[in-house]
Amino acid sequence: MKHATHQTLLGGMALFVGLASCGPAPQAGGGIGGTGSIASIVASGPITGFGSIFVSDTEYDTTHTSMTVDGNPGTQSDLKKGMIVQVNAIVSQDSSMDEPVPRTANTVLYEDTVEGFVQSVAANGTGLIVLGQTITITTGTDIDASIPGGNVANLMPGRDLVEISGFVTGDGLIRGTWVELKRLDQ
Image (cartoon, rainbow, N blue to C red; front, side, top):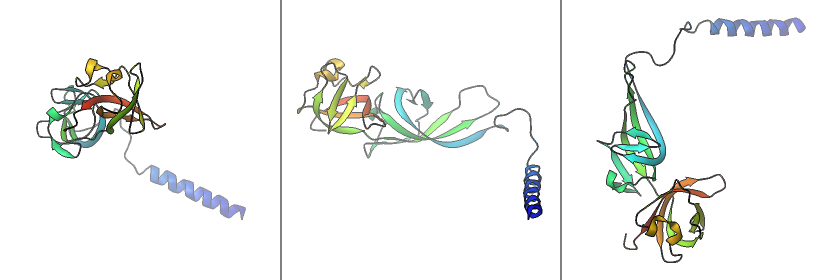
């Protein structure tokens, strides 16, 4: 019995070593070989700039991009700094170049995180409640010019309708990255 167990164990080890030696020989260096590569990616994050579109400080060319804003066809002019977007893009790199990797956005999707009437506002402007959701406002939150004084403390509970983009945290709070006062006729 003991002899059969040892034979099985040795046979398994021999099979493993045999299969492991069948792979390609290790090579020095690293990275991607060849003259270039193309990959499809999905990225999301806040818009940090324009020209093309910068998402989390990474540039994506938007020359031929299809954009969707709150479920409707949109354009880049509908987007604002701080909005959380999802980008489906193509990344191509010529490994012979030491330049930034070109990224071309196929689609950009924006959906607000919460939109509704302000229920309450922290007196110091560090938070508000909309539709029962607590939104934290930080120094990194982009406050749209539509909000008086650029401070959410100036919003009126029960009267002002806002649209908010942000990250939902593990405890269910929303860390606002962008806040806009909406007109009721929008």
